Image 1 (cartoon, one colour):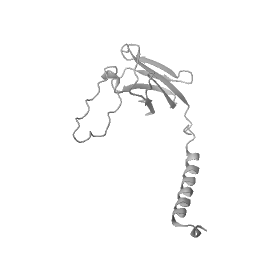
Image 2 (tube, one colour):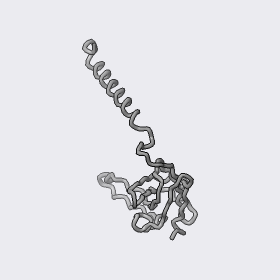
Image 3 (tube, rainbow, N blue to C red):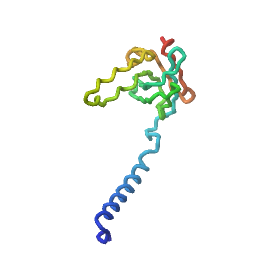
Image 4 (cartoon, rainbow, N blue to C red):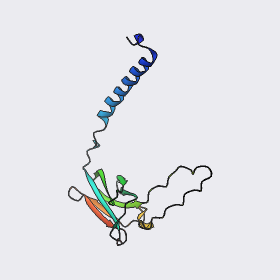
Length: 150
């Protein structure tokens, strides 16, 4: 049947069939919650420095006992919601955004790296961060002020 179509039409039909197969398979694979039997919850974390929202950066959670982890980018309000976190005790780290990996255009000076004094060094690594979050069925919102935290 396909042989009756011109080459561009055959290519379109093949592409359409391929897309249909991809959509069909991906719809069955991404239910949003892993089916591993672990109890999970969504977590919202707010980060401030001296009461001001930290609006750039990433928050990561790591349960050092189990290896469970999750993370996400801070929004303009200094908060992030991380979905499907396994209940447990987590170390919280806050890291500045990654610099642009693109090299400068020929003849342009490289960009000056941006400093993030509102994210002190000790909060950037799990080994030194004093921030902790115990995620339970009831406890899903956490607020940290990086200037006042121990």
